[in-house]
Every structure is written in C-alpha cells, then in structure tokens.
Image 1 (cartoon, helix red, strand yellow):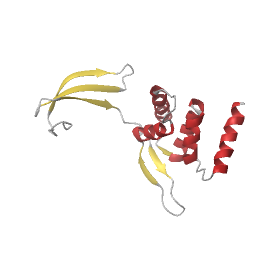
Image 2 (tube, helix red, strand yellow):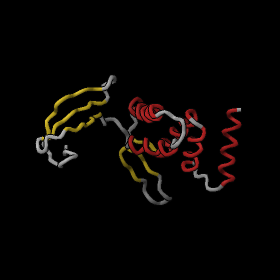
Image 3 (cartoon, helix red, strand yellow):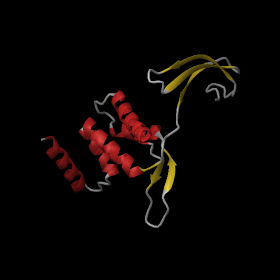
Image 4 (cartoon, one colour):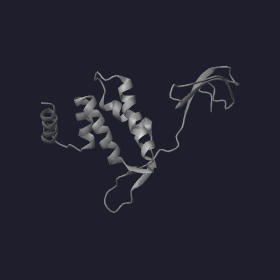
Length: 157
C-alpha cells in the first residue's frame, strides 16, 4: 500500500473498524515517510465470477474478473440527476454480487449481468431504466426508444 501523499510504501495501522456485516474492514494508517494519515478499505474478493464478454461471431469470447465498481459506475450514469438515493444503487450492486456468491457462479455472461441491472432499475426508477436500456438493448433509433417507453407505460398502467 503506497501513501497517497508521498508515495512511500511503508505505513503503520493506527485504527481498524469493520462494517456491521463484516464484509469490509476500514484501516486508518499513518505513513512512516511523511507522517500523513490515510484510510484504506479491505473487502473479500473470493467467490466472484469471471464475466464472459460477447464478441462478434467467429471471435472467441473475452473473460475478465467481475468488477463491482465498474458496474456501480454504469448504474450511476443511468441514475444521474434522478431522485435515487445512493444506498439504493449500492443495494442493487450488492444484490447482484450476493447472487453470484449465493449461487456459486464461476462464469456469467455480461448480458446476464445487464439483464439483472435492467430488472433492478425497472423497479427503482423508470427513467434510469430507459437510459440503461438504450445502451443495453441497443435501441438505435427513436422509434425503438418510443416502443420501449410505451412498454414501460403499459406495464405501469
């Protein structure tokens, strides 16, 4: 762990706290090089699947480790300027991550993850759902977007 202030690699732990669910540990550290304090957060990464990325036909699929932060950021983009509390987004990401652990999934397609996000956003906020759906469902013209909006409106009425 490098100090964010001076880049030194030696630090000392001053205080340790854990969250109520024991999923993360927060450590308060002091740099032995510059005496500045900083915090780190540790969490368990074991048990998360590889994400299989779809490719064009004939090209082998690419695999990469699941990245909850990347998922979180994509959901935040869809939820931008909407009255959605940050904990609701965190719960959606945590729920998807928990599903992987509970089902002991080794690999999952990016399409399946996208579908889980779509389902979660539909329950959370219709505008965020449409924003995410435009990209995920590849709605490439206004007629397709209008059709999806009509489907959402018909489900709520």
